Image: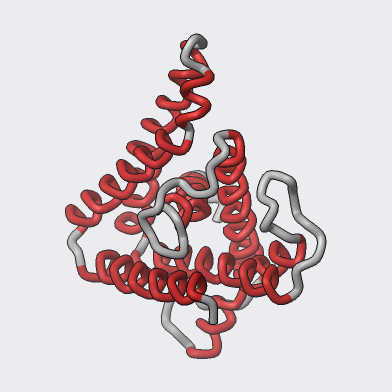
Length: 226
């Protein structure tokens, strides 16, 4: 096992323990503080990542401010609001399920991409492959299968077409979120948003898919689509 992979696994385990502990054992107020802190940190990484564009757009006030305004509105308003709503107003189990689907989607992309490889998915992110994307979709369905096999009591218990489509939708948005931030990293000649997490890069590198998924799921819940 390579040193980089060892760092990646170790960091992932620590992050999962911390995240699940905060989600399960903290009060709603502390959870809100937590998501605001995460959003603020992601906003900081967003600004640092776009340093080259900000320098380029210095004489174009609209483009310059748009990067700041997007970060402020998205990471300090939309992300905390949607996270709090899904965790508190919907249910903890549902929030955990979204998180688990995103994790499985990422793992599926990594496993299939590394073992099968093949044709590149897009020029935006050279490491992404078509096989990896397919793996993400396949793995995203596994949480529902495990829930049914273990007979876990949850509102998301049934293995039916709607729930499968929901999992595939979450995986799709998760992958698009990854590509969205990869696009901006590429524009700024950056590999990672920071060096905070060994084996992963920045916090935003680790949760780029999730931070896009949560507002989308919040929207379909508000609209009662699912």
